[in-house]
Image 1 (cartoon, rainbow, N blue to C red):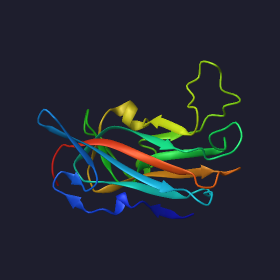
Image 2: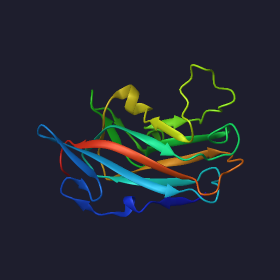
Image 3: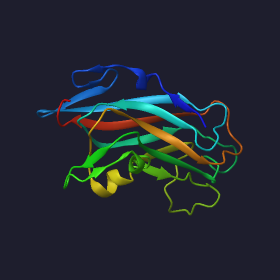
Image 4: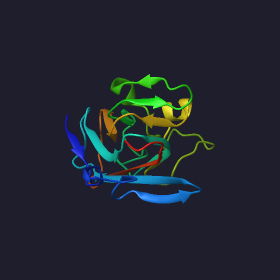
Length: 183
């Protein structure tokens, strides 16, 4: 098990978030989109973690997505025995009632994705032409926006077996947030 860190996750903070984040004014709110990309060569082993985006304390996550090239050959975008746990490395609160969640809950806070097997997906299933393009979900979907209580990384952790790995695969994690309060 190895932890990898993207170049974007290594960038230092600036006054409204992190360097490299795309900033857009929406009224008086500054929206940020932080994006981190990493190559996942050679094929990962269960437990490998990619820290792709660094997020500041006080950030309120409102959305994002995981985009990746095909991970496996054949009819599946990735081995169907792989789960991609998309989460955070630290504590956060939901914005509805302020309930606090620790780092153990955070590991899948942004979703757990099992890539689709194109051969088994029905005609009505949403399936990309090639690779992965999935909106973040998990607790972000069920609890609403998540407020970070400490500086941390957004990450992707591989769980399971990566069979038929495609050399040169890449993934990008985008996290949309705004600053609720500057730490």
